[in-house]
View 1 (cartoon, helix red, strand yellow):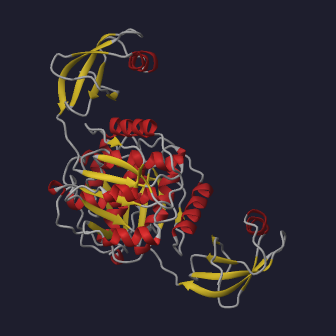
View 2: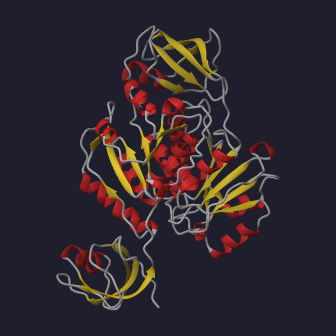
View 3: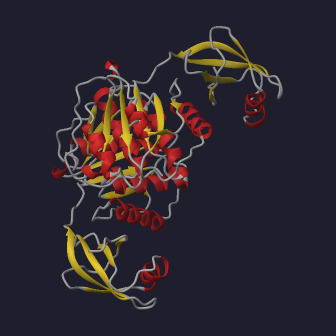
Amino acid sequence: MKQAKVRLYLEQALGEGQTIPLERDQAHYLFGVMRMAVGDPVLLFNGRDGEWRCEVSVANKRNGELVCVGMTKPLQLPPDLWLLFAPIKKARTDFIVEKAAEMGAARIVPVNTEYTNSDRIRQDRLQAHAVEAAEQCGGTYVPEVSDLQRLDKLLADWPDRRQLMFCDESEVGKPSIFDAAHGADEGGWAILIGPEGGFSDAERARLKALPFAHVVSLGPRILRADTAAVAAMTLWQKNLGDWG
Amino acid sequence: MKQAKVRLYLEQALGEGQTIPLERDQAHYLFGVMRMAVGDPVLLFNGRDGEWRCEVSVANKRNGELVCVGMTKPLQLPPDLWLLFAPIKKARTDFIVEKAAEMGAARIVPVNTEYTNSDRIRQDRLQAHAVEAAEQCGGTYVPEVSDLQRLDKLLADWPDRRQLMFCDESEVGKPSIFDAAHGADEGGWAILIGPEGGFSDAERARLKALPFAHVVSLGPRILRADTAAVAAMTLWQKNLGDWG
């Protein structure tokens, strides 16, 4: 059996014997860019039905079609973890979204803080990065990237029982302790990573006073936001998530 | 007291009352680019003498001079951890070096594996990235970036008693267990991250058979090399390094 070289996310339903009519850009990618032909295999997932091995049944640049041959991986939802981060420079923001998808965040929430360097994001572009990362890492789920939200509003409407791992760079050098007992299945979690300039004193005071916040140090050096995001998700996944 | 906005690595000696004659490119940066003037503060470190607050005593684009006012941070060496990685695309290789410096590796070793995508590196450029990351993260030490080495040779000449955390992507989905008891002070450690194509079967078999190798899974998704580097260093620093 030929090995699939392409792994794609799409929205169409997947299931035994299901045919998948392709949209024009999907057909262009598979037949124009990847030069696939009738009979060639491709792995597909849609975030709901697991991963399926499919084969090209019609290869036409305008109305190609695939047919599902068999399930190769069941749906595996990530733990209920949100990653909240303040957008930074474009390339690093892209990296944070990519890393969050690879590391198994269920939702990615760009937040506007007092010192946030940018106050607009391109949600569609970031969502596309999350899709690409999911295609690449073998996951069967794509985290949703939210629109930019104000941190103060988000905290004011905070969901009942969701815990918050607050990565405060002013904790630098203190022992890195994260051994919360509250599991992801009891209301979920969020990780908060600050902007380049850190949090304001008012934000920090407010965050530390929240009953659901767990202040965590990420070692003796000040990490960039993208590094901090991966490090914090590692600690969380290892302790409470799906790395166990 | 004016707060220093610039933090720089240089090679000159630092100490109480020491004057530091600047080289032409250093003077250009401080006075041409950063527009600093006599009396302005700057934080300096050289990887040996800790971090010092210095002030501009002569601001001249050709022969500027600084004078050390007082130590602001003692030298803090990272734990004896090497990061071994197979060079990938330029931007991601740069990121891995940056992340290794931030995460507190003592030495960064690009290795050539059977499936390594590139067989040359620009050691000087990578070393400059490590310097920049050290300036940014507040560390007082800059890890040395080695020249590209062949993995098989490196393993053949492996230092006595150094342990190896082998992040094998074929372990994906197995429980992520890393609880080695062997500390960094008993011969040191190295982390090995593979290339995009993973390790060859022969390499994997050889690595697994090494008495000093500890095979570690990084969760249920396949991580890109740069993500894997940060995640592995987080596990290590948290368990055996300076995050404790």
